[in-house]
Length: 116
Image: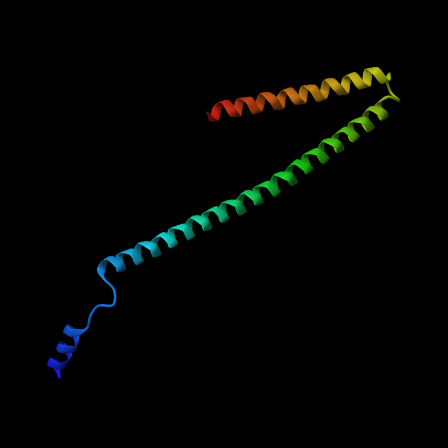
């Protein structure tokens, strides 16, 4: 029985040569690598789209916040105009907002300078 198996094994011809097996393996490996690259590109595009959506909502909220700030500033100016001249109240509000802007600018410049 053992001899019979050996005889059949020795007479069987391999269906593919080593070169064909290596070519097939190389082709399969190439397909896997291309698939991984496509997957990485799709994931990067998804992350980019998510970041873009977040940025759009952040920009919209910043614009609406600015509009709300301006409306509140005008309301304050209108109310204070009953107590003092309109030009003086408007000048005071402009100077106050400018001072806050300068403070925020210098704080931002200082923290960006410390990080680099």
